[in-house]
Amino acid sequence: MTPSRFRFAAARVATLATVDGAGAPHVVPVTFAVDGDTVVSAVDGKPKRSTALRRHRNIRANPRVSLLVQHWDEDWSALWWVRADGLAVVTDTPSAVDRAVALLREKYDQYSTVAVHGPVIEVAVHAWSAWSATA
Image 1 (cartoon, rainbow, N blue to C red):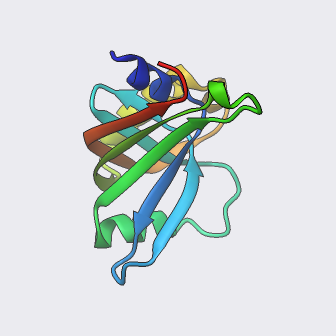
Image 2: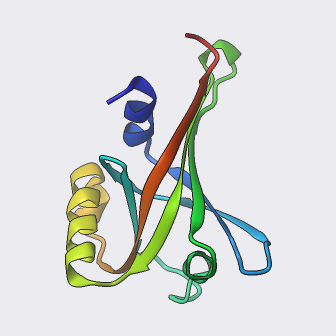
């Protein structure tokens, strides 16, 4: 795993960018896990206004997405970001949900007590981009 992918995988939160059918952008923070060139995220039991999430509608209308993780510091020499661009699907198949739950529980202790029923987002990453203030 390259250093930038390691940074991405180790990050605690990513920003998911989707676009609806009319081209309007939507950006939301998500928890996630990485398995090779696949990034997974799931709808969990935390309170939400609705279970019909805009990110899911957007992915169904336009599967192209970006995920961004970043490190901010007042010392600008410590800044970095990593972006994963890919094609996403929203699925509630039992095998996909089980896989996502296992990956998320491995990464986040909170998922041991937070229900995850799906659906899940699976992003097949086709391009990784990164920048760092230092080499």
